[in-house]
Amino acid sequence: MKPLFAVLFACFGASVLADAPGPGDWRQANERVQEAGGWKAYAREIHKAASNRPEPSVSSEPLSLQLAIDKALALNPALKQILSSTPREPAHYLLLSSQQKAALTQEAHLIAEVAALWYEAVAGKEHVAQQSQVTEVASIASELSGRMQKVGNLNALHQAEEQLSYAKTKNDLARSQLALEEAMEKLALRLQISGDPMQIGLPSRLPEPPRSLESLKLSNTDSALLSTATNNPAVLRLLSETRRAIREREEAFRLVSHYKNEVLPLQRRISEEHLLHYNGMIIGIFELLKDAKQQTKVVDDYLAALGAYWKADAALLPKLTALREQLSEIRRDAWK
Image 1: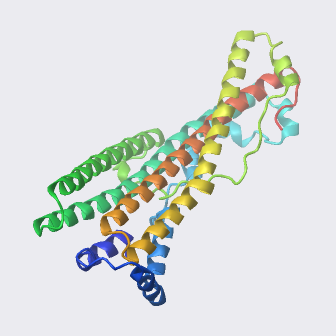
Image 2 (image 1 turned 30 degrees about the vertical axis):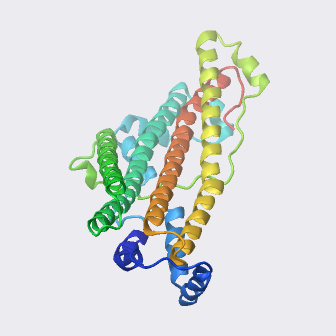
Image 3 (image 1 turned 120 degrees about the horizontal axis):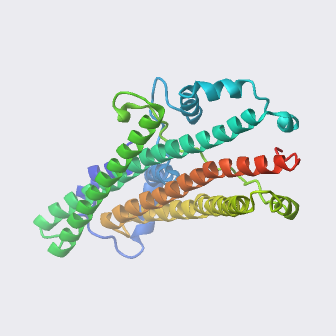
């Protein structure tokens, strides 16, 4: 099936010049369209856009997050060697050497760093895909307004507004492409990947958020024990940073869940109603194009929230690792 805006562009010439139906006629028109499966076909396309997760690109060896972490570890053979002989079971943590504990802490920071770069690059790729859709819709609206203005069916003000909207979306697309290139450069540099960074195969989608978030809260007992550590100021700062990281992760999860469970379904419903009204000739092509812009904007907002959640999740890992290390120094098995 062609993208929605491509279908609209192919058929707008006849629809926008048609006479508006009289009162009551739109219901019969909708029934005829529905019998033909027309608006349902549009609705399926709009549903895909509102979910709007672009299909993953095909790559011979896509750079998954785990592969990126493995590449970063391979750049540090000494760390990788220590980790290979370090047991990960909670019961063994107190028996680890200081070198092994330090290696686990270093690994946590490495994972957080690489994950943040990887999420930024994948999010940038999705953002460019979304902005490309917005730009294409604006291009259709601009060309349509120009044709209609030439034959006297649209005033010059409306046509200028559509042209301005198209110019702005082109600028937004250029900025998003530049941001993607910068993100890919940073990822390639960190992993020491030679060649054109834009040729690195990345997934087209960020991972979906979890259905529920495990509650993380430092107990009063652990806080009291940590406050007795010999280095007070540093530990207190770590406690504060960890609590803030937990709150940021929780808030990011709340926001992305709100978009996924409430905002996107509502936008999908609105888009389906717009398509139904358009096929019944209640609204015109410009209203439908405006809705197409809005739905891609909502999806882009969701993707921004999703990227923020995964970055907050990655940033929390080294904080928790450092706290567990501090608790182990006062003979607490906190590696669970």
